[in-house]
Length: 207
Ligand code: TYD
Image 1 (cartoon, helix red, strand yellow):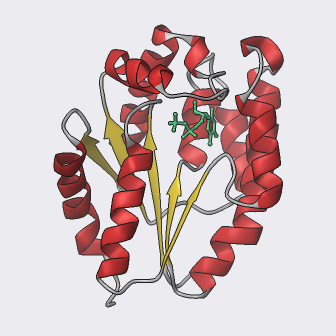
Image 2: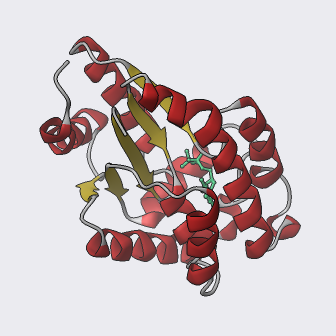
């Protein structure tokens, strides 16, 4: 597939959304066409599913039901936003992709890895070319995430131990997959941005 497919991952409050904006700005300034998008969401249908999964009580959905909802949202995002942008030769930056499901649904609440991976193979079938993992102490991340206004706190409400399992899960995936780059996210946005740029630059197509 043409274009470059980049995903940003990390625990809640890791700063990846800010970094996604900075990266998109810098790439556009260098002459690249960029689609910056997010999960859950990134297409009108998937944004509707986003509200179902991110708002409401912690016990609203089981991990199994969440796997189906996140994968349904991802399929729509892939069809409507990601594949068309890659077909236009753009750089696609997605704030979260399938690794979030592997970690938050597959590992952090019991072992559903096999289920996540089978459904991924059946319904999604692609991986990013490059994945930046913004790694941060979960206590710092959770303090940042819960300080933000808004109602999308279902996962933050699962608590610190949940975020600690998620961090360990992301680092384990990074150790197993060559497409990952682990970025130390415990610094100011500009410093982290420079680290992210250094990881992305070698993979860029000619502008
Ligand atoms: P996000 O909007 O990235 O939140 P933040 O900006 O605070 O990092 O993600 C929202 C939540 O959705 C986040 O807590 C992780 C969760 N999530 C999953 O559990 N599984 C998934 O597959 C995805 C994409 C997100």
